[in-house]
Image (cartoon, rainbow, N blue to C red; front, side, top):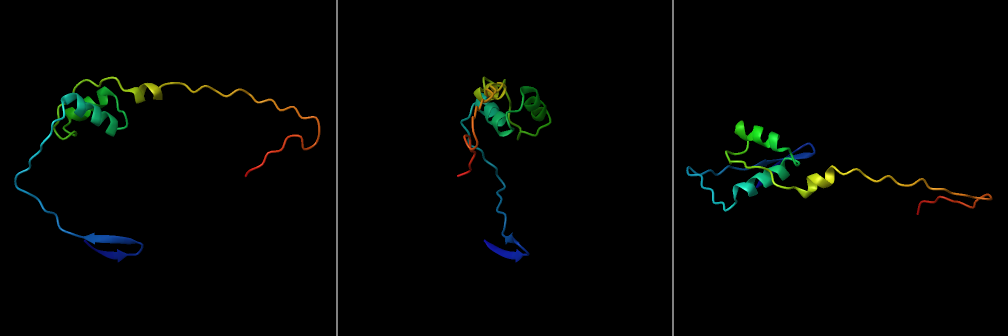
Length: 100
């Protein structure tokens, strides 16, 4: 490809090659496609994915029920808070903070 510099950016000059026959070869099941879209869309809810599918925004692929997603479960957990640290110093410079 050839590019021309415009300020701090490069504009690439190229051509698009397209075919009159679009072919797709896939061995993914409906569940795999659903899980893939669920992850691509930031772990979107099943209702949201279904809405996008009805609007035809998911490349016309059929969507099934979203199966168990470990990442979604872990994301809903609450963090355990840290215990309050107690520093007991008796004299000057007994406790020093430093950044190495």
